[in-house]
Amino acid sequence: METDTTKGKLVDYRNLVNARRVAAGDDRWIDSYDPYRGEPWARVPRCTSADVDAAVAAAKAAFRSGPWRGLTPTDRGKLLVRLAGLIEANAERLGQLETRDNGKLIAEMGAQTRYLAEWYRYFGGLADKIEGSVLPMDKPSNFTFTRHEALGVVAMITAWNSPLLLLSWKLAAALAAGNTAVIKPSEHASVSTLEFVALFEEAGFPPGVVNTVTGFGPEAGSALASHPDVAKVAFTGGDFTGQKIYEAGAPTLKHVSLELGGKSPNIVFDDANLDAAVAGAVSGIFAATGQTCIAGSRLLVQRTVHDRVLDKLIAIAATAKMGNPAESTTQIGPVTTRAQHARILEMIAAAKAEGARCVLGGGVPSDPALGAGWFVQPTIFSGVVNTMRVAREEIFGPVLSVIAFDTEEEAIAIANDSVYGLASGIWTGDIGRALRVSSAMESGTVWVNTYRAVSFMAPFGGYKRSGIGRESGQESIYEFLQTKTVWIETNLSTANPFALR
Ligand code: NAD
Image (cartoon, rainbow, N blue to C red):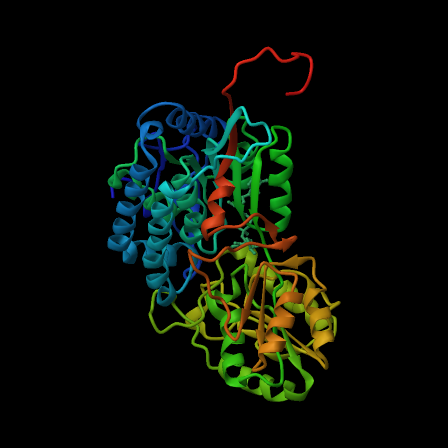
């Protein structure tokens, strides 16, 4: 791609602003690390507020005037559908880049990057189906209707664990609604986003509709989240950063949606198919090396089947193949950053100190072949009490807390005893119980006899400290629209001008 120029042995990737590839104004860079090798492999611009100003100005100009403004919703939809085809054609390459940059398994990335196309198809199809209404009026001489209008420039700030997926959940809906975008990916994994946006140019999106600024959160991120010309911030990341984004948007009263972290309960009742439940528990916590917002990091198991479930769980997790994420047989890759690696090990030490029983893993692997990478063994603690730090704080790594319970009421109470509410899982053969418990869960998603399922059709988002707003599904497009009410008086009169009409 034209964005690549090799400097030394690192590959330089540049931002896209107004259809031009640009470095930071003061030519500073951030190294991007390969977490498997523990060394930098690429560089991305370290943007400052001046770079953010330029990107927002481009997005604002594209929104206010120019070809994007003049497109019909049907034409916008066609562009999004064309983009979907390009995503499929480039899925393998983009998946490989993400694997290199954040250590996610190629075994997962191939399917995940192809699946992104569906968000653009779905919202492309929705673009010309957003209808206002003619209102039945209590004032008969008035003809009154509503229309849904784009907000303007939307800032999209994303996390490092699934950069393109998290971005697409926002971008597809925002563009279908007619907004323009400035994207700030995580400083730890920006490369796939910088490559991805080239496809928008190829699909024929006008200049300035999609722009990027890379950089650190407190520098580029904060300048973007507080920028007066940004109408909305759509954010994915940790809850404390989410709080800062909310505060940064307050002075200019921005629309804000937040997709934040979780400490999701995965509840196994004794009437469940235990093999399916154990497979779901493994997928919930060890897939993506536990670096997912929806990680089922608290496994609540009914005491009558507790030991059997634990044995099965250990048997599967103990054989998980750790290794190079670029190899298709690897099941557990490295964690993405050195800091995250240290934080996970610190949480493991805290769990041991609090009296949780480490029944699997609990440290770094001894295999010298993995020595350079940021690996953590799949780790299981049993005997966890919900008041322990390991059960309360998001770890964002392959660490599972197993908590025993006796009754359905107790399971619900433990599950909801968390500041988070992103997702929960329920494993049961009893449909009545499935309905009762799913309605009692304080979480934006509940999976029954499955875990970690997402779709472009299904709204996703958090309760409590897990977030505000929803992404995916038809309703999510309204997160990027505002309603205008138009009143037309059909009977001109000179009513009392000093009274409410
Ligand atoms: P993070 O909050 O550290 O960073 C997220 C983004 O915010 C990055 O781009 C970062 O540069 C930026 N940022 C940091 N400080 C900022 C500031 N002051 N102003 C503006 N921007 C700032 O999160 P992370 O470590 O990249 O990702 C892990 C977190 O993301 C976890 O908590 C995880 O649960 C959450 N997450 C949530 C979802 C979801 O959909 N709910 C999905 C994936 C990850």
